[in-house]
Length: 626
Image 1 (spheres, rainbow, N blue to C red):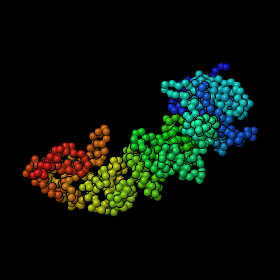
Image 2: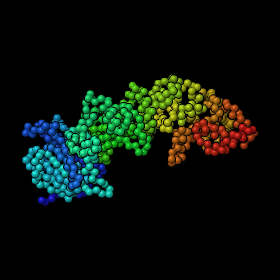
Image 3: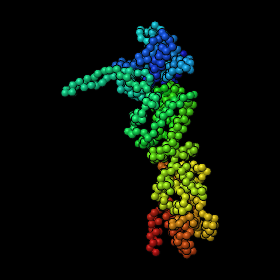
Image 4: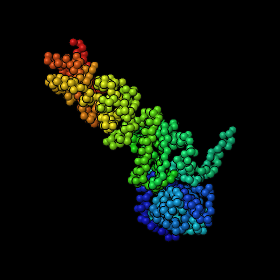
C-alpha cells in the first residue's frame, strides 16, 4: 500500500513538535489517555443527542496493556472511534485538533469537558516509539481502519479487522540507549506511577492487568503471582467535589500524601471561579518550612491541571516569590493541555489566574492576622522572613501588598505587632516610627541611642532579622509616618535649646573633633552630642545604608564593599568629654590613644569588628596602668 505524506511540513515540523514543545518524554502517556478520554466523552455526548447510539456511561473505560518481549504498549478505549476520513483528517495533519473542532461546533449549552487536542499531543508518542499503529472503528460506521506510521516519512491507512467500536493505539517502544531507558514504559510499576501522576483525575476508569505477589503456603513460605484487572486512577479530584462532601481531614490527608508532609497544613484555602476564565484552586499553607526551603534547591510552584489532567507538577509562574511556601493545585478548563512551559509563561489566562491567586492568599493571611492571631503568629514565625524579603525585593515594587502582613517586636508591648498597630498606639506628639536593629532583642535594648527614644515614652520596633532593615528602608513610610533609625545621626528628638547648645560646643571644639576624625579615618565625622545619657560614645550612620545593613553586606560571600557612613558621637556631659579636651591641649599622643579606644568601644557596642584588637587591648592596659 502506498505511503501518504503528512499534509503539514514533514520531518522538520514533527521534530519541532516532539523536541521543542515536549521536553519530558513521560507526558506521551498523558496525551494518549487524554485523547481516549475525549473519545469517550464524545460518545457519551452523542448518546444523549442521538437515539440510535445507546451507551451506558459506567461501561466506558480506557485500558492499558504491555508486552515486554515484543516491546509493545497498547492504549485502548471503547469511545466514538474514527472513520477513515477522520483518521486522515485528525492524524494525517500534524497539529490538527479533532477534539478542538468538536468542542467549537458545540453550542454553549452543550459544552462538555474536552481535555486534549488530537494532533500535537498524539505525535508526542514518537518520542518513545519507533512505530505507531492505530486501529479504530467509528460508532457511525460498520468499517474499521488501521492508521500506521514510523515517523515523519508518512503514514498508511488500510482496512482493519477490528470488530469493536473504539480505538486501539499500539506503540512499538524504542530500544534503550545510553542516554535513556525506554524499557521503563513496559514496566507495570512505572505505568501505574505515570497514570497516578498525570491522569489520576480522568473521569473514566483507566484499567490494567496487574500482578499481585500473594502468599500461597505460609508454612512453606511459598508465594504465587496472581493477575487481576485494577483501576489505576481515582477519577474525581478532591477539588472538584462538593465542599459539603469533603471534610478537613480529607483535605489534610490529600495534602500530606501529595506533598510528602508528615504534618497537617496550617491553613486550607479553596476557591472556585466561574466566568470568562474558569478555574478551581486548592491551596495549603504548611505548618512548618520544608527542610530545603531557604536553600537554592527549593522549587516553588503549584501543580497545574487542565480539566483534571496534569500539565505541570510545579508551575512557578503561579506564585510570587514571597508566597513560595504555598502548596496546592490549580485546575482550569481554559488552559490547553498541549502547551509548553515557554507558552505557559506567555499565557494571558495563566497570568490572570496567578494574579487572582496572589490576591486570594494575601486576603486569607490578612483575615488570619485579624481573626486568629495565634495561628498567624505561628505562620509568621515560620515564613515572616519570606514576606519581608518580598517587601524589598524587586526594588520594593510589592511593598504595598505586603506591608500590612509583616510584624516586628515592640519594645513597649514586648511582642510582635503590625505597623498598623504601632501607628494606632502612637501618642499625638509622635511624628515618626522609630526602630533599632541588632542581632537580638537584648543587644538592641543595650544600644546607647535607645535610651533617648524610650525617655520620650515612644515605642521602638526592634529589628532582629537580617532582612528587617532592608524591608523598612523599602517601605520608607507608613500612613504618612516616616521610619527613623535610632542609630541615625539625624535622630531629631532634641529641643531647639539643646540643638543650639550642642552646635556651640561642636563649633568651639572643631579643631579637636577634626583631629579625632583624621586619626580614625573610617568615620565621616566626629561630634559631641547630648543624645546619650549614661553611655560615653556611640556610632550613628548617615544616608541610606545603616550599620546593620553593612553587617549583612560584610557577611556576604562576595565582598560588595558597601559601607555605612558612620559618625562617632561623644556624650558631651560624660567625664570622657572633659578628659579629651584636657589631653588635646597637654598630650596629643595620649589624645590619639584615647580616640582609638573610644572608637573601638563604639564599634563593639554597634556590633562591628575591631580591625586590630591586640593594639586596642594594649592601649587599654596602658591607660589602666597609669
